[in-house]
Image: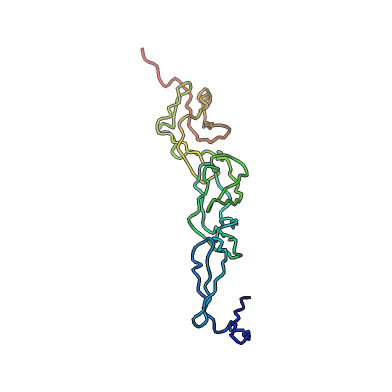
Length: 212
């Protein structure tokens, strides 16, 4: 450590470190002059002040790490820590996160950037897939004569997806061959590889009377 010695005119040398006043401006980086004062005497020496900078960052991943394509990244629970060249650490904000990775299916890396340093964590991005379809509203017409054409007016078909969403669909296919024979018939509605059904009554065409 610093030792200050006072030299007297009789040749004595006495350690006056405890009583010496040391002054220096170490608030900025660079070569700085340290002034040591004891009584009316001063001495100086130089020190190099190094700027405190971020050497690296680490990231604790957010709580949510599974997504469907197109979802927004949720950063709740994420902690970004800056590690500095003076040996200290600090939990920081003001970082940036690459969110474009949620547009691609698969296990993907999310990059966090702070003060020019980066750290990463991984998330799983799943495809949105059709789970099932359902008849929400059956057609208005439920009775037909054999050979009539199925009328789908009023029919509402809803698709359910693995991300919990639902949506009405229009481009489904309907099996109309069931109207070729009499009886209570099940009509099959198909969309992609999923099906749903509803029943109609098909009436045989018979003679009810004759007139002359």
